[in-house]
Amino acid sequence: VTVDTDQICNAIKLAYNDARVILEPAGALAVAGLKKYIEENNISGSTFVAITSGANMDFNRLRVVSERADDSERTLQITIPETPGSFRAMYSKIWPRNVTEFSYRYESNQEANVFVSFQPLAHVENDFEEVMKDLNGNNFNCTDLTQNELAKTHIRHLAGGRSGAANERLFRFHFPESPGALQRFLEALNMKWNISLFHYRNYGDDFGRVLVGIQQNHGKECEGMNRFLQDLGYHYIEETENPAYAKFLRTKSSE
Image 1 (spheres, rainbow, N blue to C red):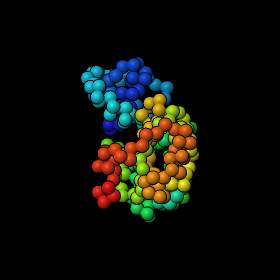
Image 2: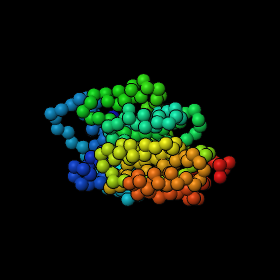
Image 3: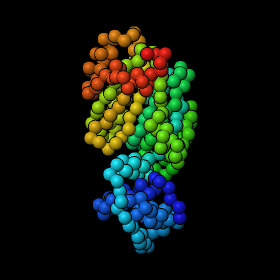
Image 4: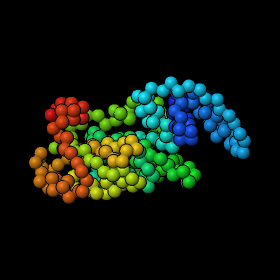
């Protein structure tokens, strides 16, 4: 029986939830292999023993374990047309499933690529496959990246990159994290301006954090947008002048 990194991380999580002990990866290997063996052979009503050993776990490593431990999470790359409303229409094909990650960046006037992770409905058979079918059937071509090590280790942190989107302003939003919170935020964000950047990751905190780029229609000063943001009801911080934004999210020609 062979297992991958995600399955080992999930075994560490299972041991912690069950016995409140934190195993090192090698110590959790037996739990991961046993779980996989039982699932693959559809075994029930039997007793198995996994010998675990070692708690050589560095505190900083727990961040990686937590990131990779959720075996219910599925990851997709979705291509959407760069037209008003397409981002929200794409999201409606995933709702009401719990979305754990969204990453989007304006690239061109033709189409955009979205990196999204979510948890399929556990009580619905083949739910993930049905979501992909629905997306493809509505011209949101998608690729399953759930088992793609490059995507999970690196691309998820790099997706989007730089853009020369005109008249863009950047904002950080905070909202109370709860089931459906992201859906309510997107509904509240229903507006006349184009969203050119969107990044969200659920870290299990009490508050959700979203980074949003919005293209104004009339240059940098736009009182209409300022009034909209004030009436939105969410705490926000404008980051348009942040040097990190200029260096890593904007093309030099747009500075």
